[in-house]
Image (cartoon, rainbow, N blue to C red; front, top):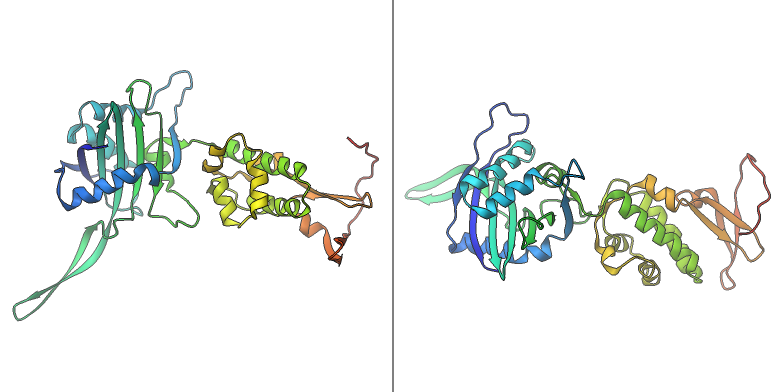
Length: 339
């Protein structure tokens, strides 16, 4: 898609500031080194912005989002005047910790579909050294932008209809530690007034049920063991955001165990949805791990405590003979029928 316009704003921190500075804006020329760099972000946004998001509405009966309305106004009349509403929203949720930033509003269109990319670059500091006749001049610079062209936040929206589309988007945050796939809350929840497309409860419920179903279906003892361990690891990540595929990678889950989970998911795409893990929700749907021996004995314990409750000792590795041991006070005894 070709870029139609780029509007840029200098956005200072305005949260908890009594009289915040106005965001200064300018329309950029669609040529030169800066344009080439921004064009790379624009063209790569559909790959880089991999975290699905959607606008949050306060009243489900009346679909309305102030942020989306500002976007639509900008689409109709792209420029500094319409873009300043968006820039001031970013200013009003930006703290001194995030600091000064440059916001770019990049709008393109092709085959009747609009593509809107928002990107924010942080300010940095540096030292400029210039050789001069007879000596050296050194200056401290407080406003250096794009020192690292790969350090930015971005959001992408695609759609054809201004009335029906642009409720969902996708986002990325290149300023955070890529190893845990986190993203700044203020960029998604405060600035864009959005939430992750897959809610914490829905995503957690999906992975918990998948682990439970896979462990019940599989006849492979190693796979069952891996799934029990995987369940314990997942619960420990309460509040952190991952996709199911990212969880596989984080814990290096063996391929057989991965396939057993993927086989019971409602669709292949759901393994890529990012969500916040809710440990309490996980325990509701996959709270206990169990081991049944060929002697008829069965051990059950909370999945995140199983290895602490039962001490496992290998008696004969070749024949798979093991011994489990535990101790404690009897608090309940009952006879159960087999389901």
